[in-house]
Image 1 (cartoon, rainbow, N blue to C red):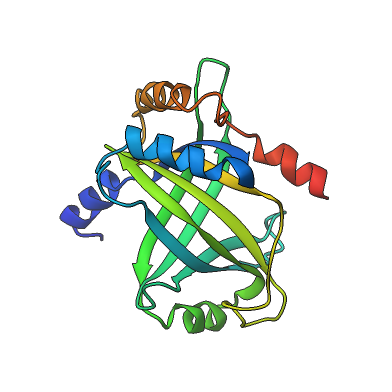
Image 2: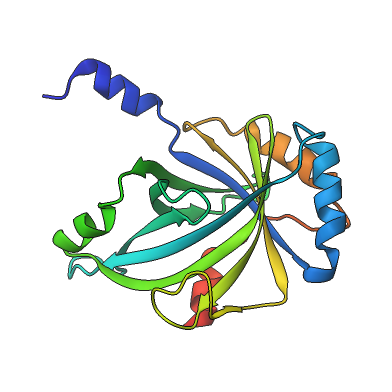
Amino acid sequence: MMDPQLAQALKAAPTNEYLLQGSILDSSLEVLLCRLKGLCDHADSPEEKFVDHEMVYAIKNASIPQPLQYSVRHSLVQPENWQLRYLGHSEMGDKSRHTLIRNCVDVATSDNVLQFLHEVGFRLDHEFVVKGFYFHKGRMKVTVSKIFKMMQQGHTTDNLESIVPSYLVELSVLATAGQDAIAEDMKNFAEQLKPLVQLEKIDHRRLQATGT
């Protein structure tokens, strides 16, 4: 039987991600960064940069139609930082819901997480390098990032190729279930970024269907 305190802690852990997404061309990056610095916390500080190596691992099971996937993100700026993330199916909801919602479990791990995944049957599906900036506004997090294809496996600092001439912009909040009022705050913040970037809820199922 699970310890009651542990059960309560797990119940209170933020496992819902509220998300809005958009994109900007490379030529608009500096203008957007200036806007975000003015709107977000710590406006006098330089924007925070990140460079991460992300590896997506999958395991197939005959009982489920889609492979189970976990992503491992390793910071190339702070090499001691490793994170394991699981993302559930996205929920679009009706028109009254301003954001996409998906189940999200994000935990810090040690550097032997890759060995652990291999031992339980996961295999590397794909990998890439992501570079960008992130900002905070209260509970909200904004990331502006570019994804790079690794032309040679294991080479995370050279032989990188930008996939598209644009940056992905994401506005997100991690919260417990039932806190849908957060979506209104996110909508209001997104309005302040127009017309530089149009943040909206993206139906990932349609994107997957287009790619198959």
